[in-house]
Length: 156
Image (tube, rainbow, N blue to C red; front, side):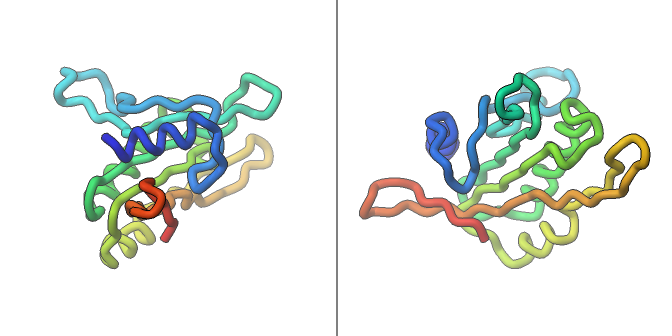
């Protein structure tokens, strides 16, 4: 929860950095069809960015946080949420989604799993249509810096 709050603080205060600038963020956002609350899937952080000067959404944000080391299941969880955002919000346009998996460590098999499954093929445009591939999942390590008493984030 502390990591989630720190990331939310960074984004809320519009501090440019590894996660970028977002116009709206929320935490623990439901990412599954309606079912009893105990069984609902929830994204740790969800947000969006508007087209500058307009109230039109240009990008969606997903951040999933793991307290310790990430595992293959975490990669699958991120992709389940990416597909949910695609179906519910971006209407088939994966290019509108930026996803992050934040963890203390990423074993080599998790990095390989990301390369294998964190991609989606989709069609963009109307006429003429164009095939595209989405691969916008970023793996972010965190660590505590004793000198500054802050969390430090680093992309791997």
